[in-house]
Length: 93
Image (cartoon, rainbow, N blue to C red; front, side, top):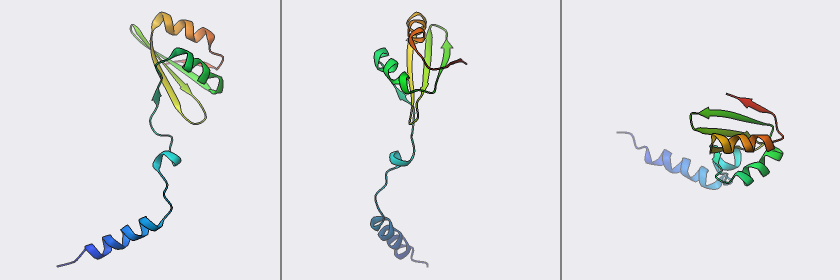
């Protein structure tokens, strides 16, 4: 019978000695949902583009910034008002 415990403990020792790096430091992760339209507007100043996806009564806006993707879900009328204020390029999906 093979004893794997020794190999696992050696790997654990190496991991404990290596510098701690979280996945969030190296990968941007999941999109972040914003609920405040004013905050979304402020983030749009740094954005490279805004994608617009109309889903019936709801419109979803996706804002691509250098570090993250931010989303917001709004009623169609509110979304149109917010889109008029955005300065970044807009793409409709």
